[in-house]
Image (cartoon, rainbow, N blue to C red; front, top):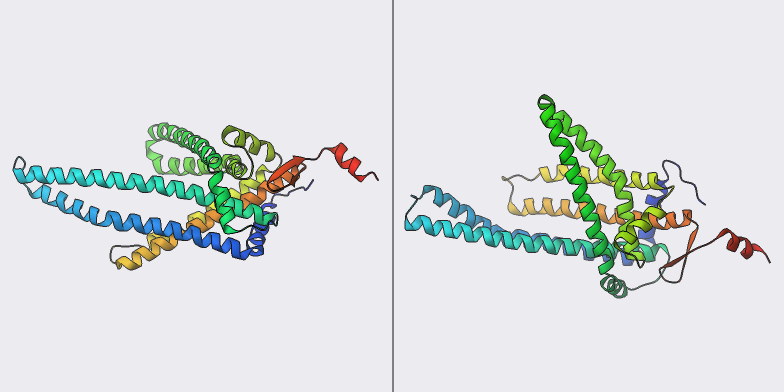
Amino acid sequence: MESYTLFGFMAILGESLKNFLKHGKLMASITLLILSLRSLLFLANTFSIKPLLKDLITNATFLQLTTPGTSEFAKLVTAVRQDLQVFAGLEWIFIVTIYVTSLFCAATTILASGVTHRGIDISIKELLLRVVKSWKRPFITWFYIALFELGYGFLTWATLIPLVLIFPDHVTFSAIIIFILAAVFLSYLAVVWNLAFVVSVLEEKCGIDALGRAAELVKGLKLCGFFLNIVFGILSLVLIPGFRLVNSKQLTTIRLSIVLLSVNCSWLIRMFSLMAFTVFYYECKNNQGEKEIGSLEYTKLSTAAQVSADIP
C-alpha cells in the first residue's frame, strides 16, 4: 500500500499532466470541444441579451421622464414589463443550458482522463456515447452535491449574520474571517463530493451510494485531496484580476475577448482539477487494495488471495 506524505498531491498533479500528454490527440480534441461549447454559449448569451438590455434601459429612461397616468406612460410600463419577462426567460434558459453543458463536459473530462490513465484506446465518438448513455448517474450525484453546497452556504450565512449584529464595529473583519474559514472547511468537505462525482462517472453508482463509496475510498488520503482543492481554489482566484481589466472605455471586441479568455482559463483549471481527482480516485483504490479488471470495473484483493497467488 502506497503511503502519502503531506505533499503527495504533487505526484497526482504530475501524473495528471502525464496522462494529458500520453494521449495528446484525444485530450486535445476533448479540450477543444469543451472550450468551443463554452465559448459559443457565452457569446450566444451575450449577443442575445445585449439588444434586449439596450431596449430595457431606453424604455426605463423614458419612463422616468413621462408623466404618470398618461397613455404613453402605460405603454412604457408594459414595454418594460415585457422586456423583463423576456430577459428572465432567456437567462433561465441559458443558466439551465450552461449547467447541463458543464455536467456533460465534466463527465467527458473524467471519462477521458480515466481511460487515458488506464491506457485504454478509445475514439472520441465512443467516449461521447459512453457519457451520453451514463448521464443519469453524474446528474443525480451532482444534484445531491448541489443540495449539500446549498445547505453549507445557508449555514455560513446563518453564522455570519449573528456575528455582524453582535460586533457591528468589526463587520468587515468578521466577514473576512468567517468566509476564509468557511472556504477552507468547504475545501475539506468537497474532497468526498468531488470524488463522488468521479465515482458516478467511472462506476455504476450515483447519489448517496456514490458519496458513500467516495467516503470509503478516501480513507487515509483525505489530506491529499484537501490540498488538491486548495491548489485549484487558489488558481481560480488568480483569474479574478483578469475580469477587473474590463472597463466601459474599451471597445466591445476587447471587453468580450478579455472575459472570454478568463472564462476559458477558468474552465481549463476546472478540467485539470477533474483530471487530478480522476487520478486521485485510482490512487485511493490502490490505497484500499483494489485493482481494476475489465473495462471500467474494480475488485478488492484480499490478503489470502494475494498470498495464494504467490504460492507456486
